[in-house]
Image 1 (cartoon, rainbow, N blue to C red):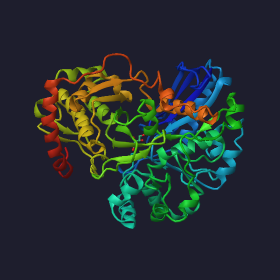
Image 2: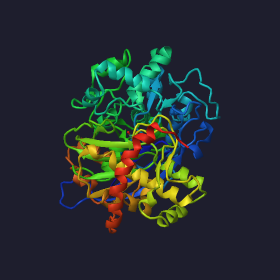
Image 3: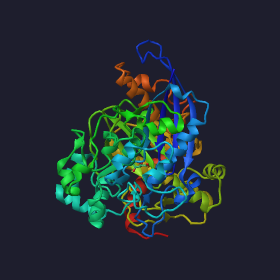
Image 4: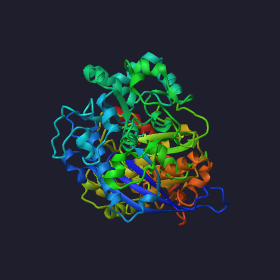
Length: 548
Ligand code: XUL
């Protein structure tokens, strides 16, 4: 028996799942290894780390286009998580490997002291105090912080339009940039964010020795040494050459001076980046488990929803809503809304991301003083197609389509109409998912649904009807965290030379539940075929039009 820890550092929380694999043949025997989840715990940044003052995991900002968070908060959450795991009844001596998933695109800026501090973490002192802040809530930047920038820009930031334009101009055009890196320049991508930091704070840039993504920062803390990036997360930077899976010198030059020296290397996703540092062993009683390269949450979700073959897609309904699927060869989106990332399996993945996901659903729910049960009742009380009422639910500036000025747009829909607003937000989200993912060229007949909102059958019925596809769901809704635990299992087996196939890795655990899938209803399918066209026609008008 062996244990594998998956961690997921997401926008709003840090989650851990422990996978137990019973049978050590690593796929040599014909019998599939039995897998089960034996531990799960989540730490909410807002609730469990209130001193940092985040709202939904984001620090307050006067500029609505700016979204930053605190890397020290993520580190402190790691300390709290290890304490919780140590207090459980798990036999930690069996822990073989740890891998992680992190919100994509966010970046952490470290000064030269970081290398020494991370390598010499002292077990008797909390992690954040060593990184440079006291746990007494003093948010002032301490003199000896390992950070050269106290905050981390995250994926919800849309403040780098100018930098995107400059980078695109230096390379040629948006299409050339997308062919090279997998995506045109996007505001939230790490390259444009780095360029903004360099331009606005040249001294801070000069004082930066290392730029990590959230994924490699967290892995560095675990391994006690600077960790590399994997292609899954590095492809969310507008800096990696998609085909060589290495830094593109052209992109680095277009982004910021001396960038090459400040970035970690890119290694295959299954790389063991080190051993759990003495800090974690001595402070919490962990064994010297292998630390595997972390990846982005979407690449990890690909594994956690069992999408190891081409032709299937998953929809993740989380803080962001995403639609993704594996690609053997990269097919870049000429419409400029989608992305091609590296997949942990060594292939590629196509993805489209919508910022107004769960927060938009929550906003409508709260505006009408409903709980989730009431939200579902409203969905059931309204007909598919909503009698023509349409919402463009851009509570925040939207990524897909590109909407810079936030504001909900309503067509034939009164703002106070509770039931119709509930249906309108869900229909809009599902139609946008369908309309904006056509570039992936996948004939969708089954959708793997994951993320918090995937527990809601009424929401999934709209998904099934809009796509005219069966929707299957999973026992584990945090597919990113499960994907991380499975990546730990795969990497450890690969390091041991047992050549475990991805089929065997996901077998029996990253599979849809046996219950019958949610089937599309033919009468609703017809309604949505018409409504999707109308939605697509109105969308550009809504983008340029007024908001209420
Ligand atoms: C993907 C994206 C989001 C974040 C959420 O491009 O920006 O899905 O990864 O954590």
